[in-house]
Image (cartoon, rainbow, N blue to C red; front, side, top):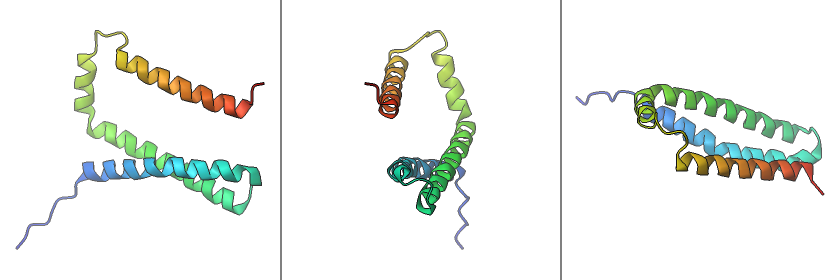
Length: 110
């Protein structure tokens, strides 16, 4: 007899995180396109999909952090003396650039 395989929690969490992450930009884009229609049933559906994917992504991410806390703590101990690494500076700059671009798109500065 073949032994029953144990449920792989890490694979489940990682897959859930990946699938919700992939769905978020698509549902956000659809919501953006349908935003010009007002609050229709179709837009409400896409808003609901986007909100649920965001909640699921957050839940899966929190569980991912819990499952990988030892590795995260070890990495934090390695960079404990570093004030701001080059990678962190690049990541923060990239995020700031895209958030600013999005805000300027919404505000339409003249």
